[in-house]
Image (cartoon, rainbow, N blue to C red; front, top):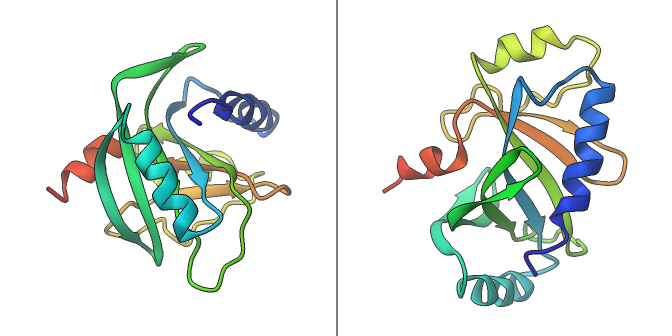
Length: 160
């Protein structure tokens, strides 16, 4: 179940390079998996809990999700993947199960990062949120790249 995200990372990284965003300014943090239903989420949560620690489960902007941490970060190419996020569909939302997004940490602040890349069509709806602020680039196939200034494990530690 934990396999398969590598292809998404490779595709998203290629798209980011074409947009002028380099791996030196956006450090890979974690990957996100969109579940098809609450039942699918609960089954995947049960399966993954054998190998990863659930560090956060709750609702963020209307989506219920769980964030799971590897005991040791997973090495992929030159990056350390800290964990995996599983997302339940919102009420009434119909979704297939798929690797949905890759999240990156950027230095500085999100406003400066967006300004540095004016040729990108940004989703800035969550740029100034008090909980999990981020910006995103949405791709045509339903996948996306999300950017924030703290790694996900530091963000969820605030809720303990």
